[in-house]
Length: 255
Image (tube, rainbow, N blue to C red; front, top):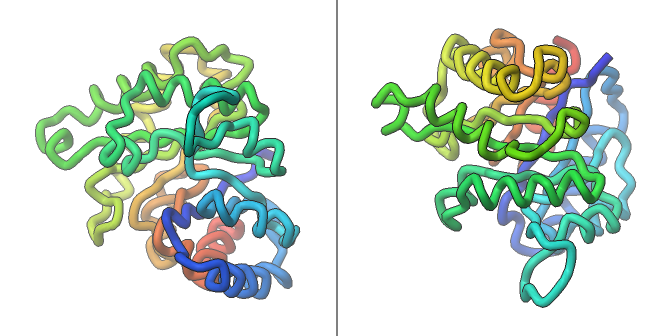
């Protein structure tokens, strides 16, 4: 049985190493006595803390990076390659997050290069897609999501797609208290699935896990994950609270 996926994106938090050590202490406490039979949990800290997370060897927790550069190595000051992340011992990398698109002007061409690099390095990829409020109100959700999916996956063969999960991350819900309904999430899910089926096949499409990301809280798990039959969630600010984050994972595991 394919496991569901719960990703914690810590973003640019916490500021100090001591704070991160306390975070890991709490995370270990929350996960240590729990069993997750149907759910895979991944924490993506700032890259400077990645080795601390890996060294802890926490039960039930895998590690991921929030971003990578598309080149394997070279004179690219300040960048981290997918090969470095893999060599450190991590399993996942996020690509195409709405904040990377918004603040760093990342387009599908760049996301596609990063995605290819992630897969070539043997990592699993979390590809984020989503529309803005302006695009939704303009009736362009389907057009935007299809373009993001198809352009991001351009040139990636069917044999690689099982290593990709796609997170539907409506930009207007990220970091806010707004939330799409279960029906709106299901609609986005079907749009993404249709785009994948057109690119590959129905059989290949089913290999890709579809997640929801954006304002995920434990009391909203049924609305954003269970009811629309998503394969997991990408958690932002709530992942900074180990009790809440693990609670989300446990609800999904038992659903």
